[in-house]
Image 1 (cartoon, rainbow, N blue to C red):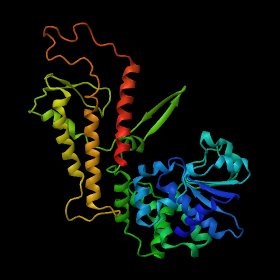
Image 2: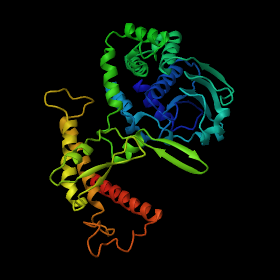
Image 3: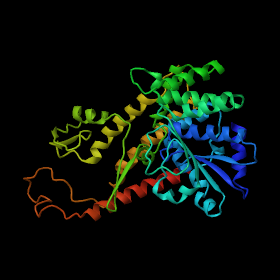
Image 4: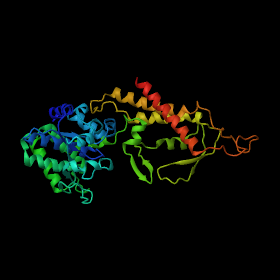
Length: 400
């Protein structure tokens, strides 16, 4: 597999027709491994000198957001550098030049930005219910199984089992197990065909990892955000909707809100917090009874809470380290993340402040006697942009 992928990158430098095996835009582990393995199979079984290239349907910069893929590639010793990403190949230019054939795997509907490529689609291999109105007019192979990697495994073992090496088998094996939730019958994700081909792979390669071990490792890596920046964490599981020219993005942050408990229990300084109603179930809001406690006085408390949180995420002494990452590297990344968060919290203290919060609303010459400050939505947006830009600049300088 690795030698084949090295050759794919070299093929991009040549001006010749390409058969591109393209995964879906989510680019999860199933889509990635299915694209790699199917392209590998087609390249090994096609007699003509045609070039089959797997393409991951995301930008290269987005790969770190997919921790399970990063972890699994490292585990099977496939360097990220030899993979081909969507921003490294111009499919539309190839199509205009008459040099593109597409094979869609793990999806059967092109994105709106790629609808012009529909005539180039020669085959579809998917495991989702078909939508005839949107499916390209080509050979379509769809079967409702738990993992598309199962269908790729079936094609390889039925068509050319001799080409299957351990590296490719390990990728397919782990992907099916993760997609089918460790083949748990109670979950009901795995079909008889999924189970059949996991067993066949294990029979051919008895030294493959135990199911529980590979499932737990991939599941842990999938939700591990310890090495991500704030921006990457927001983008990791981002969902976007469009309505009448308005774009709304929704993100999930994989972090326990233990800070809320720290603030509630605080006696030094006493905040005198009273829970306030919130329209969002995952958002905690409070009325601060002790208004003498400013943000600056809160910073040490928050810093202590964040330090305790990051300490709890560090690798305990004596436990094995995974993915070739040392304890020192993990500690360094966690310290960097903690410092970044704290610097971000204190950043706007250096900017021209808004009218200060009064210590008591009945104090003479209260700053709010003349009414609330006039703040527009544009002013708030500009303030947030300044903070974000400052953090990005600081991060860039630290890397240098």
